[in-house]
Structures are given as structure tokens and as C-alpha cells.
Image (tube, rainbow, N blue to C red; front, side):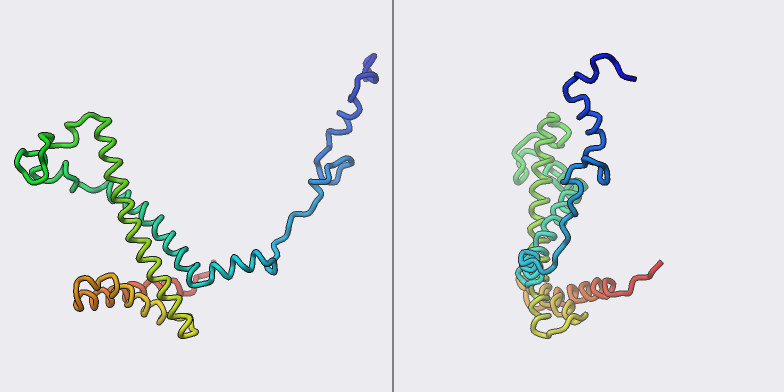
Length: 206
């Protein structure tokens, strides 16, 4: 139905014609919708540079350290929320004369809510950061040693993980003496062997 004066409305025809704009295959479609998506090119110099960086020992060490830091932060926060060995829960806390307990407050619940939250979040942050640093150090150390051993042996097998685990455990426990270093070496090597063997198991196809 044509209404009087409809033909004189500026842009009326453009509005009808633009109803299909932007839809591929329709007349008047925008060219940006018809342009093909950029394909992944493995020969791109930037892609090659990133791949080589991630496959290098430095890249693996940095990535493992970052992953360990993130995992340690989450784990430390969880453990801090479940811990009951804070100064406010330790036996004798707040008793005058007790070592390190000059405050008369015996329990965390005796403090105002705002103070409880501040102390709780501070404790969680400190524990989370400490655990994150430890996890990052272990992850970076293990990844760097394993990558170096793999480069020397020119093999990628279970022996790399076992050797790297032994060296990592020994280095981490070196402060406790030779016996502690030997126990750390054996324990970390066994753990690494178990994880590596499980990761190398063939996956069952559905």
C-alpha cells in the first residue's frame, strides 16, 4: 500500500534496500562480511618465532614457572582458608606474657568484623604468595633441567623426567645434608616417573 507522500520521504528507498545489508549473498551486502577470514599460516615469521621461543629451554622454563606460580597461588589460598594454625588459633594466643602475644585478644572472633576480614585476607595473601613462589621455583627448575637433559641425550623418553626429578629433588633438599638430598632425589624421581608414565599412556578411544 502506498501512502500519499511516501515517495517524497528522503531515504525511504534506501531503508528498504538496506534491510539485507550485511547479509552475505544478498544484494547490497557489505564487503567486510564477504571478505574471507585470515587463514593460519605456519610459515609466518612471527608464528615461527613464537613457536621456537616456546620450544626453547628458556621458554619452557618461563612457562613452567608461570604455571607453577598460578597453581601455587590457588593452592596456597585454599590451604590458608582451611588452616587453623594462625596466631589467633594457636594455644596460648593472646595470653599476657606468652611469647609473641602481647595482645589481650585470644580469638579472632573477639575482633570487629572489619578487622577479622583484614587479618584473614592478609594471611591468605601471604600464604598464597609464599606457596606460589615455591611452586614456581620447582616448576622452573624441573622444566629447565629436563629440557637440558633432553637436549644432551637427543631423546624424549621417561629417562629425562626421572633424571630431572632426581636432580630437582636433590637441589631442593641440599640444605638438609647428603641424606636429605638423596631422599629428595629418590622421592622426586619416583613422583616424576609416575606422572610421566601416566601422561605417556595411550588414550582409550571412544
